[in-house]
Image 1: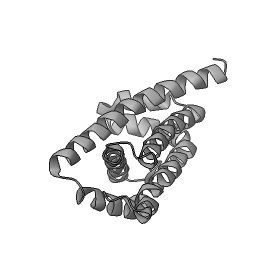
Image 2: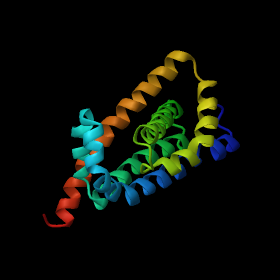
Image 3: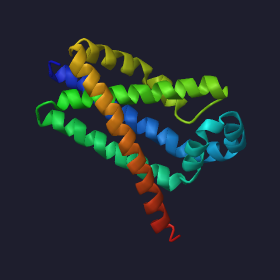
Length: 178
Protein backbone atom coordinates (compact mmCIF):
# COMPACT_ATOMS: atom_id res chain seq x y z
CA UNK A 1 0.00 0.00 0.00
CA UNK A 2 1.45 3.35 -0.99
CA UNK A 3 1.42 5.19 2.32
CA UNK A 4 0.76 8.77 1.37
CA UNK A 5 -0.54 11.23 3.93
CA UNK A 6 -4.01 10.91 2.40
CA UNK A 7 -3.91 7.12 2.58
CA UNK A 8 -2.96 7.37 6.22
CA UNK A 9 -5.73 9.90 6.85
CA UNK A 10 -8.50 8.06 4.97
CA UNK A 11 -7.56 4.42 5.52
CA UNK A 12 -5.41 4.02 8.64
CA UNK A 13 -6.74 6.62 11.10
CA UNK A 14 -10.46 5.83 10.83
CA UNK A 15 -9.87 2.22 11.91
CA UNK A 16 -8.97 2.94 15.57
CA UNK A 17 -11.81 5.47 15.78
CA UNK A 18 -14.40 3.01 14.46
CA UNK A 19 -12.95 0.20 16.57
CA UNK A 20 -13.25 2.40 19.67
CA UNK A 21 -16.86 3.38 18.90
CA UNK A 22 -17.79 -0.24 18.21
CA UNK A 23 -16.21 -1.34 21.49
CA UNK A 24 -18.08 1.42 23.31
CA UNK A 25 -21.41 0.20 21.93
CA UNK A 26 -20.59 -3.33 23.07
CA UNK A 27 -19.46 -2.13 26.52
CA UNK A 28 -22.61 -0.10 27.10
CA UNK A 29 -25.11 -2.61 25.73
CA UNK A 30 -23.76 -6.15 26.06
CA UNK A 31 -24.32 -7.06 29.73
CA UNK A 32 -27.93 -5.89 29.99
CA UNK A 33 -28.76 -7.31 26.56
CA UNK A 34 -27.26 -10.71 27.40
CA UNK A 35 -29.11 -10.86 30.71
CA UNK A 36 -32.42 -9.96 29.02
CA UNK A 37 -31.95 -12.51 26.24
CA UNK A 38 -30.19 -15.28 28.19
CA UNK A 39 -33.00 -17.87 28.08
CA UNK A 40 -33.96 -17.13 24.49
CA UNK A 41 -30.33 -17.46 23.36
CA UNK A 42 -29.66 -20.65 25.33
CA UNK A 43 -32.89 -22.23 24.05
CA UNK A 44 -32.53 -21.24 20.38
CA UNK A 45 -28.76 -21.75 20.15
CA UNK A 46 -27.83 -24.59 22.53
CA UNK A 47 -24.59 -25.27 20.59
CA UNK A 48 -23.38 -21.81 21.62
CA UNK A 49 -24.24 -22.34 25.29
CA UNK A 50 -20.58 -22.35 26.33
CA UNK A 51 -19.98 -19.02 24.57
CA UNK A 52 -23.18 -17.47 25.93
CA UNK A 53 -22.40 -18.55 29.50
CA UNK A 54 -18.84 -17.24 29.12
CA UNK A 55 -20.11 -13.84 27.96
CA UNK A 56 -22.56 -13.74 30.87
CA UNK A 57 -19.56 -13.92 33.25
CA UNK A 58 -18.37 -10.54 31.99
CA UNK A 59 -19.83 -7.55 33.79
CA UNK A 60 -19.70 -4.09 32.21
CA UNK A 61 -16.30 -3.37 33.76
CA UNK A 62 -14.91 -6.65 32.40
CA UNK A 63 -16.23 -5.77 28.92
CA UNK A 64 -14.59 -2.35 29.23
CA UNK A 65 -11.25 -3.82 30.30
CA UNK A 66 -11.35 -6.35 27.44
CA UNK A 67 -12.24 -3.65 24.90
CA UNK A 68 -9.48 -1.37 26.23
CA UNK A 69 -6.90 -4.15 25.93
CA UNK A 70 -7.92 -4.83 22.33
CA UNK A 71 -7.85 -1.10 21.57
CA UNK A 72 -4.29 -0.84 22.91
CA UNK A 73 -3.26 -3.71 20.59
CA UNK A 74 -4.80 -1.84 17.65
CA UNK A 75 -3.07 1.41 18.65
CA UNK A 76 0.26 -0.43 18.75
CA UNK A 77 -0.40 -1.86 15.28
CA UNK A 78 -1.24 1.65 14.04
CA UNK A 79 1.89 3.09 15.69
CA UNK A 80 4.04 0.53 13.87
CA UNK A 81 2.78 1.99 10.59
CA UNK A 82 3.77 5.49 11.72
CA UNK A 83 7.18 4.10 12.73
CA UNK A 84 7.46 2.51 9.27
CA UNK A 85 8.24 -0.94 10.68
CA UNK A 86 8.53 -3.60 7.95
CA UNK A 87 5.32 -5.55 7.30
CA UNK A 88 3.36 -3.32 9.68
CA UNK A 89 0.81 -2.42 7.01
CA UNK A 90 0.31 -6.08 6.13
CA UNK A 91 -0.19 -6.97 9.82
CA UNK A 92 -2.53 -4.00 10.23
CA UNK A 93 -4.43 -5.14 7.11
CA UNK A 94 -4.95 -8.54 8.73
CA UNK A 95 -6.47 -6.81 11.75
CA UNK A 96 -8.80 -4.79 9.50
CA UNK A 97 -9.94 -7.99 7.80
CA UNK A 98 -10.49 -9.66 11.19
CA UNK A 99 -12.57 -6.64 12.28
CA UNK A 100 -14.57 -6.89 9.05
CA UNK A 101 -15.38 -10.52 9.89
CA UNK A 102 -16.38 -9.46 13.41
CA UNK A 103 -18.80 -6.90 11.96
CA UNK A 104 -20.24 -9.46 9.54
CA UNK A 105 -20.86 -11.76 12.51
CA UNK A 106 -22.98 -9.02 14.11
CA UNK A 107 -25.05 -8.72 10.92
CA UNK A 108 -25.59 -12.50 10.84
CA UNK A 109 -26.57 -12.40 14.53
CA UNK A 110 -29.28 -9.83 13.77
CA UNK A 111 -30.79 -12.13 11.13
CA UNK A 112 -30.58 -15.20 13.37
CA UNK A 113 -31.91 -13.51 16.51
CA UNK A 114 -34.27 -11.15 14.64
CA UNK A 115 -33.61 -8.21 16.92
CA UNK A 116 -30.98 -5.70 17.91
CA UNK A 117 -27.64 -7.16 19.02
CA UNK A 118 -24.93 -5.12 20.75
CA UNK A 119 -22.54 -3.84 18.10
CA UNK A 120 -24.90 -3.79 15.12
CA UNK A 121 -25.32 0.00 15.00
CA UNK A 122 -21.60 0.68 14.75
CA UNK A 123 -21.20 -2.34 12.47
CA UNK A 124 -23.56 -0.73 9.98
CA UNK A 125 -21.92 2.68 10.40
CA UNK A 126 -18.51 1.06 9.80
CA UNK A 127 -19.62 -0.69 6.62
CA UNK A 128 -18.61 2.10 4.18
CA UNK A 129 -15.16 2.29 5.75
CA UNK A 130 -14.71 -1.49 5.72
CA UNK A 131 -15.71 -1.65 2.05
CA UNK A 132 -13.30 1.17 1.19
CA UNK A 133 -10.36 -0.10 3.27
CA UNK A 134 -11.04 -3.71 2.32
CA UNK A 135 -11.07 -2.79 -1.36
CA UNK A 136 -7.73 -0.99 -1.01
CA UNK A 137 -6.24 -3.93 0.88
CA UNK A 138 -7.51 -6.53 -1.61
CA UNK A 139 -6.14 -4.53 -4.54
CA UNK A 140 -2.77 -3.95 -2.85
CA UNK A 141 -1.63 -7.45 -1.97
CA UNK A 142 -1.26 -10.67 -3.92
CA UNK A 143 -3.54 -13.50 -2.85
CA UNK A 144 -1.11 -15.47 -0.67
CA UNK A 145 0.11 -12.56 1.54
CA UNK A 146 -3.49 -11.34 1.82
CA UNK A 147 -4.78 -14.77 2.86
CA UNK A 148 -1.93 -15.23 5.35
CA UNK A 149 -2.49 -11.74 6.81
CA UNK A 150 -6.25 -12.27 7.05
CA UNK A 151 -6.01 -15.71 8.64
CA UNK A 152 -3.22 -14.47 10.91
CA UNK A 153 -5.29 -11.44 11.91
CA UNK A 154 -8.32 -13.60 12.66
CA UNK A 155 -6.27 -16.12 14.65
CA UNK A 156 -4.46 -13.39 16.57
CA UNK A 157 -7.61 -11.42 17.36
CA UNK A 158 -9.48 -14.57 18.42
CA UNK A 159 -6.70 -15.54 20.81
CA UNK A 160 -6.37 -11.96 22.00
CA UNK A 161 -10.12 -11.73 22.57
CA UNK A 162 -9.98 -14.78 24.84
CA UNK A 163 -7.04 -13.26 26.70
CA UNK A 164 -8.82 -9.88 26.94
CA UNK A 165 -11.98 -11.51 28.35
CA UNK A 166 -9.92 -13.47 30.90
CA UNK A 167 -8.06 -10.30 31.86
CA UNK A 168 -11.34 -8.37 32.06
CA UNK A 169 -12.94 -10.92 34.37
CA UNK A 170 -9.87 -11.15 36.64
CA UNK A 171 -9.34 -7.38 36.91
CA UNK A 172 -13.06 -6.77 37.41
CA UNK A 173 -13.06 -9.30 40.26
CA UNK A 174 -10.02 -7.61 41.83
CA UNK A 175 -11.52 -4.13 41.51
CA UNK A 176 -14.85 -5.34 42.90
CA UNK A 177 -12.96 -7.28 45.63
CA UNK A 178 -14.70 -10.57 44.82
